[in-house]
Image 1 (cartoon, rainbow, N blue to C red):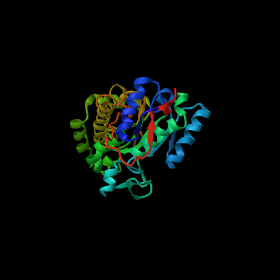
Image 2 (tube, helix red, strand yellow; image 1 turned 45 degrees about the horizontal axis):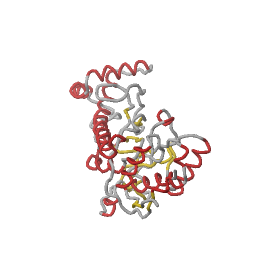
Image 3 (cartoon, one colour; image 1 turned 90 degrees about the vertical axis):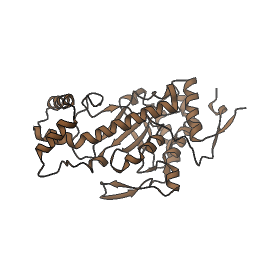
Image 4 (cartoon, helix red, strand yellow; image 1 turned 135 degrees about the vertical axis):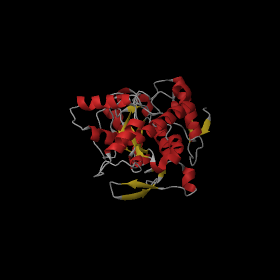
Length: 312
């Protein structure tokens, strides 16, 4: 007879460590391994509990790994249930509809979605097929008014294997705007010289030339002045994800780091071609996969799981 334990978020973290200690190739939990390291198809989890058995069925019958769990956080999912109960949720700018929408408007939380997607893999027996599957914490806001809550966003998304960074919020605060009809090019050039490493300037410019894109010196520096503050904040968030994930999962915290994270440019400018892993001293828009931190306090989970459910 197996020992039952509450399916809390804290126990889910412990369960992942136990499972991966027993089998490093287990696919109960999301990862960026297998074919997901190079390509993926994200399926938005709009119907939550109804969604996962359907995506699991599709992956098994197609013999294809998919990002079978994807939602925008905090736009669609509440990033912290306690914050919701304390009435501390905010509005999210949503320029695609020309307005704002409330955080977590889909009516569930990232913790709840994590529980549901993981436990479903056990209930349906999906894990026996050894197919990797992914979890994309989509549209993670970088900068702007979200600076004050980035630690909470990191904690809530500890199980995600992909992330889409949305740096548009930092763009809104940048004094150098791309659509400025009368830019002060001297001021922009001085800012770039003082803030952007020269090695980066040369490396990115080389990428641009190799891509066959013609750009003037003024246009190039204007773009860098617009993007660079957000990129630096993204690197800070990236470091927090890595440290937090390692704190939560120990030696298994870097299991999904072979994946890639995408960068959302908010359609404000054409993206430069991806080349090298992003760092302050290297060019390219693609960065190494970020790692995460857990929300150790779990809430509102009534189901239980027994160790005998894993079978033999």
